[in-house]
Length: 184
Image (cartoon, rainbow, N blue to C red; front, side, top):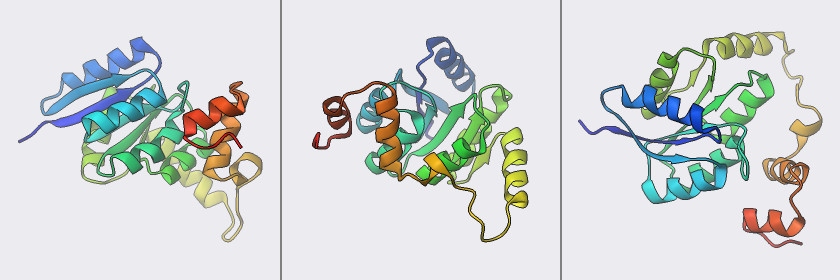
């Protein structure tokens, strides 16, 4: 049986190395590349064509949620799992809406990483247990037909992407270069 090929992207080297160790300790799993930011993750995904991409949600250059859609476009067969210290419902919603199959909290047991990888390879969703409880609670508290979207959540994916880059202090020219669009 072929090993599951995994790309890990996290801007914190110690965290990234720890995740790599958890994965390489498992039979049948292989870390084929590591990235320190979202742009590097996208480039490595295009080059290495991994089975699974694990992305930190908060990375420089291109955050995890922004990278999900771009990586799904570049490597459609790759299962994407978000790693985050944020348990906010809006982050989970954005990640899943962008195409991620998993959302794991960084304080979850290491077995969640392995379970999420195996689920994503099968095309199944995986959420850390705390996230599952929060998602179910949020779903049951919302009235049917009533949208919980507000403010930032009402922006399109591209508008959110541009907004975050502006907040990071990028110029219009810099944003255009990152997103491969005209500065206008």
